[in-house]
Length: 225
Image (cartoon, rainbow, N blue to C red):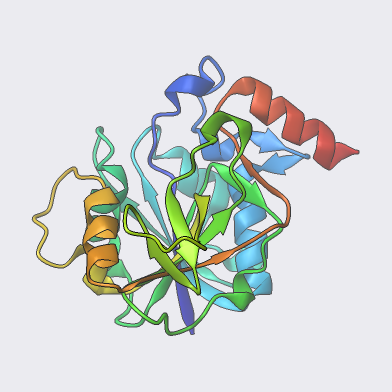
């Protein structure tokens, strides 16, 4: 049984005032909360156990989503406290609720038609990241991809620089050696790239980052059409 972690603890500062009283993942797009689109796609990929990390207005998540039974899955919540722990700290905080096998991680504030069932059950390395073509607001991308391997500065000439789509499969070892608390995951990616254990794939399907009211409105209109 595959497990997944949905990162939903952000403050949603750029989305204010919409997020003053509602967590960003619970804002509606296309007639349903953004996070529900992820839960439906995970259920379609036969993921039956999902952990959702929470912080800002955390009590609204179980009230809105319950125990997951309506999607044929079990949902558990990993509360981070009033201050989000960043991606790295959030994953480490959620590990006690996740099994020993590699798990899917997706940020709640993106939308994509990516098929989670296509992700490798056993990544060739500590993580496998889904990379997307660089959007206008991130023209330089994040990492370079060549032959399924991700690079930062030492990429081969044939590598293509892409943007991390905030979808991936992780082994628990990605945060090994870290102390509990607030920390970013980027240093762990860099360590993995140096050790040649960070893998990836390019995805050319529909993908959007939902960070501002305008981005939310654009996606909402598209889904309703």
